[in-house]
Length: 505
Ligand SMILES: Nc1ncnc2c1ncn2[C@@H]1O[C@H](COP(=O)(O)OP(=O)(O)O)[C@@H](O)[C@H]1O
Ligand SMILES: [Mg+2]
Image 1 (tube, rainbow, N blue to C red):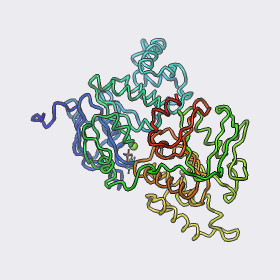
Image 2 (cartoon, rainbow, N blue to C red):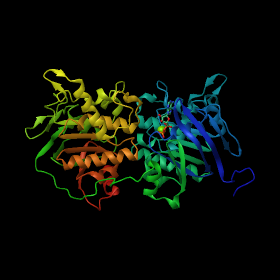
Image 3 (cartoon, helix red, strand yellow):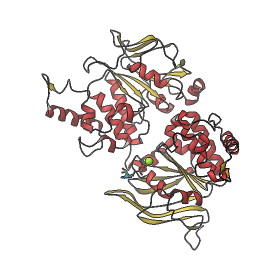
Image 4 (cartoon, rainbow, N blue to C red):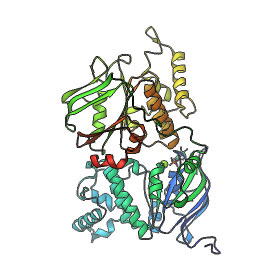
């Protein structure tokens, strides 16, 4: 329904010809599309495709170099996020957006303090009541208004930010990659909320690089690639392969997950946990075989991540033991590279798996000194060619091995974290959330790598909150609930997420 203004009556926000550069990087090039009233609009694209840049311009946090926006029928050019919020646009950021050192309710009503003050006094009781009813209505009862926000986990703080955005009663709510931080429970809360807002005629711009999630949740999807608008697709035309191709600009070759259902692996045991107990874990017994991919599934607080740390040997059990290899060597992190059998990629990649303030070369070579030495001396040329080989093998997108790791995209950082172990022929790989926050192109190559490692007789323990990935990749899946193993599933075509969830919650 085009009117004379060029604006359709259905359109809440229209974006036209947006450009944005950071130095030589063109983050957005002539981007334009529209978001309708009452629409859940997905925005998808690989890491670095411009999603956060675009949404932060709409939310007033940055300014475009060129282009126009129309919102609620009028020209829209917010100077800052306060103006945007006053106009009706609120955003939940990809990064943490709560302020430490103050309470939940103070965070919740940030910028709205005047509402609760009279003659210079804050009416804390009123604030408390209002916070309670807001959190209650969003099913976030576990957040207590008076508690210091620092007391809560990353996930809970993210939920708090969502509550804050909703409190401002936006016409357009923007949610940038928040679900990677959320567990299954948290995601359900968010999905319900989005549906409710849309039912009230409000619009949501939902940003993610998780295609399945967006296809399930959104009415339309806009695809960005390298800062360029590619297409807006309505729900009835969703077709997974077509969207993937639009995202990456090429057909994704090969299978995404493992295609075989051949679950043979050796009898030899690579990793064993016997009666392992800690504060969060009770009597865990498991065996990972040579050539096996064993999955561990559970809610984020169930103890699955503790289990990974114990399996590698960062933490030691209070009772019981975790051992590696035929000779049952105790799992210990501090072993010389040659004696070490296991490698570990942490869920908290930036803190535990990488040295961000160092270059790719040193990050990859750190485990390989035994391989690049001549006598007691490290041979720089040998080291260089070793590192280059890993960069090529893993197809790490970079300017060169001297590039700092903190300037890489999420997916390429994760490739560096993997490369550190792959090059040194690690027998046992413990991977905690191996594809968290990486885009579909990198995910595909990770899955292909895992399949290849299995074929080469390596053993993989994959801890993941993404059930589709475990179902797609593992020979067996153990379900952990409240620190205990509640169920074991074998690989099979019929295995569904629902079957597993029943044992998790
Ligand atoms: N503040 C910034 N300074 C320099 N480059 C930036 C900045 N913000 C984003 N970029 C670059 O712009 C491109 C798009 O980034 P971004 O919008 O964050 O992508 P996405 O959210 O899709 O992952 C990337 O190449 C990124 O490195
Ligand atoms: Mg982003």
